[in-house]
Length: 221
Image 1 (cartoon, one colour):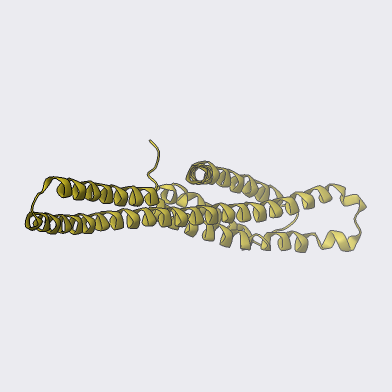
Image 2 (image 1 turned 180 degrees about the vertical axis):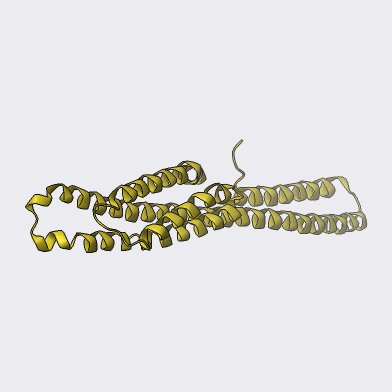
């Protein structure tokens, strides 16, 4: 069933009232003989028109307000959905940059024999600098969770509860990784394991929440 256009609804209703009143006027004009009776009829018709017009104005006003409120809520819902999607994209991008930096480092370490002594001795510092960069990712996911919470309040969805545990696990993994002094090559396996776990949690968030929000956003357009 198509949506009712609020402007058309108001105009058609107003024209209907006018048409009925106009017809009644001519009915009274042609069928009431005396001027006194005509005067009484016109007064009655005027009262009728005034009452119906007032009632219609109230109905149309309520309808237009509810329509405006629905459109306003839809606009806010779109904004909240876009904010959550953009924040997820930013968090995923920054996590990807960390992962790429680590794997580039891991690849570089396959050529230890070609490194100078200075480069070799600096491997621990280089690795820990990479780990330090992951701290911003935790902030990204905290910001994402807050955006999802706002969206869920507006759209009445359960996604916040669905992904809260994943975000907490991501933050815990990042905290433990960032605050652990890594040593090459002993820490490489543990860090690689962390990158896999982080990726799994991000994929879960995308499946449980972001994909659904994206579908709902498309439906709102």
